[in-house]
Length: 198
Image 1 (cartoon, rainbow, N blue to C red):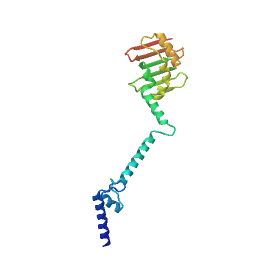
Image 2: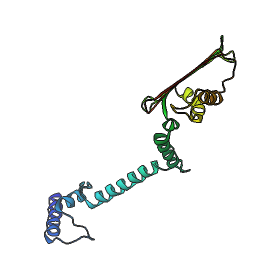
Image 3: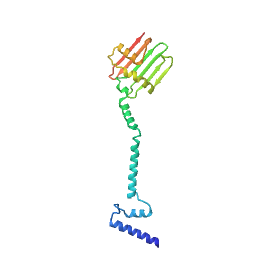
Image 4: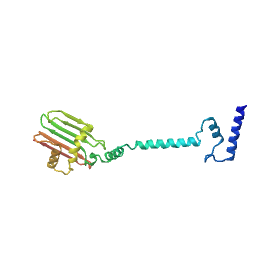
């Protein structure tokens, strides 16, 4: 009997409060929320639940925001570097899209190949001048070719002597070769080929 009276009293109080439509400390509490409060459970739409949800969202946003910054601020630097790489790679400044150099010293040789490949450059170097067989491809070859290729200031109208001088200086090619050959294909569809034999 006590249970019935307690339940009836609780329901009556809930009906009175909801029928009056009064604020409880600035919060509207409906009958369902009152029942949930009495049972220790909260409805997902309850003010407490909404506050917790908002707090959780703020914490999640803080967490996401923290992921964009580190203690040293390196993330911003990395983003700037990434932007530079994406838009300002050294090979983007070259006026040619293909470069082939072959220098034959008889029993030793030096070969360097570079191809722009629509912004995904490929490179290969083979060097046996010092008695050791050096073979580089991919990123390693590109790193080695960056300096020499960016030093070149040539176009299709460059003289043979100018091409040989610039290529030999940029690549550290010594005289005494048996055969020297360089082929360059420019973005303006012009080609340059220089051969020399000693």
